[in-house]
Length: 427
Image (cartoon, rainbow, N blue to C red; front, side):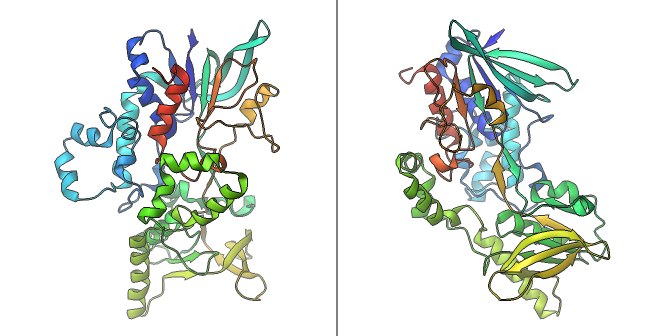
């Protein structure tokens, strides 16, 4: 069978595409003709499963789900999820736009379960190859390894890459201490294996939402432990989520970003950084500050913020602990050594690279001076005239499409635009 579309990855971005595809009029009219499948390397759908902390909430309105801005009447909206689970009236009574992270993950899983018929799990894509015919590339061969370690080859007319993100660590880590160092993306899994009654010392690196949440969680659950939140900045900052700033996440602003030159994009990225990166919700910072203050009243200091520190090296101390070596940014001090039992890095993510999967398309796709594929405003990789299939790339276009690229803000609109590219806008 030849597929019309294969999606590589089945996280939220491709989930939104699959929902749009399911509801697309052409897909409905010729359901038996348009064949699609989404290949996911995980065993099941999941979204930040190790950051499902009690009391954590998403930072965008539920109206920016995977469907509303494409079609408010879609069956895949968060409101329809609430209705389907008999919680609509109770959620309305909460008087909030911000569901808990646990509930929003349940919503995404609810959507994924409805779309299981076009999703295939335990499939690790290992290569993508152009198929030539008559001097042109007519199709693409996608090879993946299934859960039985067998290589399967599929043919498709179009492909969407949505590979997700990989954790960033602030420095290289030696094998001797690797088991005591982990990223916030592994938080609940790793923490569940640590004795909560011991007098451990935790160092948490980062000033964003995840780092602050993890530090507070450790303070609450590990009642005998001390927790140091180590940040590069001079102070923790709250996310700038004012009405005017939030306009940067709109589809209109995304289009303006794409049309801007490199210098303007760089300026915008710097100016709006506090709207998403290296900052935390104000109410979370309020809780953090209040906790520190109340500890001072009773003469305890288990939760601290150490500012102006840049982690440069991690190695084993003579006692077998994790030795963090910091550069001091705001003083003339030499390197600072700080030993801890566990180091947790809330240092963000970077897009998973698609370059390895595109190595067979050299000369078929257009690239910039950094050998990065050139992307149109509608997320399609620009190809040469002899490349017939359409290749889309999602989640890694922040430079060209703005800081909302990795967020839910434009996923619904983006999926609609991809449908227009596939089927023709007039349809």
